[in-house]
Structure formats: C-alpha cells, structure tokens
Length: 296
Image 1 (tube, rainbow, N blue to C red):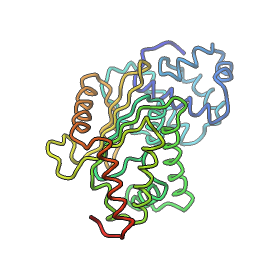
Image 2: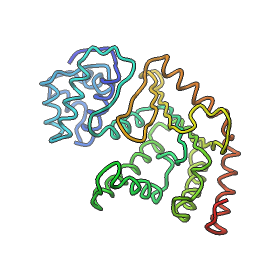
Image 3: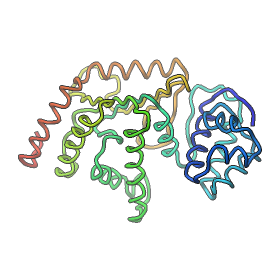
Image 4: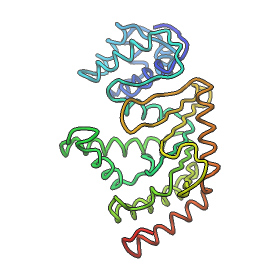
C-alpha cells in the first residue's frame, strides 16, 4: 500500500472497505496486522488517501468475509483506484452503486438535496418508502420476493437513520416541488402520514431545513430533475450528483462542475419558499388530508 493523491475512485474504495470492515466487526488495527502494515496505512486507505495492492486487497476481503458478486465489485473498485486518474467525473457502473452513494452520504458533513415531484428519500416515512419501492417493481427491477422488498425498505430506512442521526450532526438542506405534497397517485393516508413525518423531522432536527418550490415558479434551473451536493469539510473535495430515473449515477468533482451545480442549488433555494413558509404550507396541506381525501 502506498500514499497516493486522493481521487474519487480511491475515496469510493476506502469508504467501501471501511463499511465492510465495520460489518465484519474488525478494527483498523486488526486489518493492519492482517496485511502486515502500520495502522496509519489503513487509515489512509479508508480515507481515500492511499492505494492497496491486489494481493493486500484479497487478504482484506478474506478477513472481512466478502464473497461472491460483492467481492467481484470491490476487486473492480480496487482496479479503478490504482489507476492514475485525471478525470473530472466518475460514472459508477458497478453493481451496488446505491450502497456506495449511501457511503458518501454517511461521510459528508453538509448535504443539499433537491427533488422534483417526490419527497427526498431521507425525509420519507416508512409507508411512503414502501409505496415508492413497490412502484418500481417489474420496471426498474424484476418483481421481488417479499423478503427482497423488505430488504430494500430496510436499506432505505437504515440510510435515513445514518444521515439524520450521525454521531456528528450534518447540515441537511432539502428542497422539493409542491406537487410532491399531493396524494395522487399515492394513498391519501400515506401522504397524511408523510406530511406529519416532515413536520416531526423539522421539529426534532435543528440541523435540517425543508423548503418547498411552489408550482409554476419561474426560472427554476432544474424543473424536472434531481440534484445532490455533498461537502466533506477539508477531508475531500465536494461532489455533485445529477440524479437520473434510470442508469448509472454520474459524480462530478471537478471544481468548475461542482461550482455550476452549486449555483443551481443556490438559485433553487432562493426561489423556493422559506423554511417557515414551507412548513406552514405543509401544515395547511395536512389539514386538508385530515378533513378528507380530496386534493386541494
């Protein structure tokens, strides 16, 4: 293992290896001893500031009991991390990209989310999560078994827990469009629970801001797409993600690209309702749901 310039690929590998080590119940010292390296080398690797040889990576994966397709994916990440990358974007085409995105969320200190027509995943109630996952059955993935669907739902809820209740509270900014507050085509009772959930989050977490983009707002720079910005203080460069309905996620980490995405996010926050106005709107919508199932 050698010291190396941090790249996005090395950061992805490091976060993945940290998750696998923690899952196996091993300490960083255990891992260092397994490959006969100093503890500082494992710290560098997991922080994305080091590379790992193919042989040492195999020893670590054996030690962490990683097998099958998951192991093949980590091996492929290792190949990418050993390259002298000078790219400004990274498209994650390997299996399990949703897990690596969750790793980045977990490591970030400030995250700004924007979604159109949908409550952002971190803010979704359990029933809303269930409905969202069911809506993809037979389309984005094959019709899953009840156990597989439950696993997807558990992953989403665990992801929420990891972000909202991290040991060091993150600054979390959310913006979504007003149509996300309407029940159609979702179950009215699910939406009533969802609105209550939003208000509970706003009350419980002072580090969370929620803003709603009114219908028909002019000059929205992202009227039909999603956007995420992740900041890591001084530990790594910021990362931007422009979400897509289908296909691999593309991460932007060149300074010019993330500056462009940040300008878009800043504009979105400026033209959306203030957090206070947004919560008042949610309360009004909730009153409608309590009176009856009709959309207003």
